[in-house]
Every structure is written in C-alpha cells, then in structure tokens.
Length: 257
Image: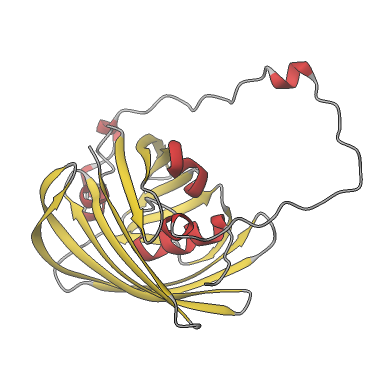
C-alpha cells in the first residue's frame, strides 16, 4: 500500500466525500511520516508554557442571523443547522474500530456569507484536525484547514442537490511537512433512500463519488457512497480505494449515536 502520511490521507478522502467527517484512509493503514531527527539537544520546557491552556473558540452565533436565501439544500444536507455533537465510528479492513465526535458551529456573517467551524475530538481530531467553512449562494466552501494550505476549487457541496446533479472538483493540498497531495473527483446526487446506522434509521440522499489522489507521484483510485440526512448531515459513508500495486482497502463510516 502507498505510504501516505496521516494528514494527506485524511484531506484527500475528505475531498472525496466532501462532508469532511474523517481521515478514513489514515484509519485504514496510512502511516504518519516519521518526525525529523535533530542533533541539537532538547530545549528546556518553561513551566509557564506547560500550564498554558489551548485558546477557547468564540461562542456560537445565533443561526437566526443566516438569511433564508442561504438556507439551501447544501445547508440542510450538510447539517449546518445541527448544533449537537455527532459521534462516528470508522471500521477499516484489518483495523480496530475508531470513534470520535464532530460539532458544527456557526460563528457569524461576513460579507453576506455565513461562517462555520468544524470541531472534532477523539480519533477524528487526530486524523482530520479542524476546519473552517463558508456558506455562499453557490454552496459550501472550505476556507481553512489545520492540515495544510489548499489550492483549487474548495467546493464541498453545491447549493442545489436535485437528483442527477453532478459536479467536479480538482484540488491540491500542501501539508505541514511540505508534501503535495492532488485530488480530482466527480460527484453525483443519485436518489433518496432509507439507510440504517447504529445511530438510527434515516431517509437520506445518496451521493456517489469517483476520483483519484496523487502523492509523490503515486496514485490511488477512490470510489465512495455517502448518505446525507436532511438536518443531520452525513450519517453513513462507504469508501473503497485501489492502488497501482493492486492492493485496496474498504472503509465504512457511520453515525454511532
């Protein structure tokens, strides 16, 4: 299997199923890059630095501030109006189940667009980090991620999700360790159907995606199915990867509570 580092795997797969839930390929066996070695002796740690706490995020803004014109299909099916923490379970070939929580927070309006942050805990935090979104008239876009700097079309979901809608996204990510990940994927809204998860049964919108990622000249194909429940967000995702070597991995992600 291609040895992609954890952040690169997480970001590439988040592109494919666009809701940004999990670094599932990282859970499926991608290994983090080894930390750089240094001949310098370790620096002494300041006790004051040890006692410093992580800055707390600003309080959530009132969802009523979002104009009705922005509350499109993307808003509803991405679950931007859902303020409760959602727990997800990831099951990958040959790996123990992983779990983590995700919370979407509305942080205010800017230039007529709604701003959101995605906060993650547990295994989701280590694999996916944090993410900033902007809800625009044309859809939901990623504006920032803690995984690195992004280039290209950052569209997560178009505003209209009518059956048969398709869209394509070509993106690249430069990770913190200076590695370049490129992604190209095409998505399609297929139909509404019932789906069962550990977190309940839902009438959900089925979206499929096909694409590829390239890291350091090595390529892997990706096939995805994702179910989006109105007002909830992604409730189940299935991802299959196939590498140039012929090896592959299957990952299942679903709402746990």
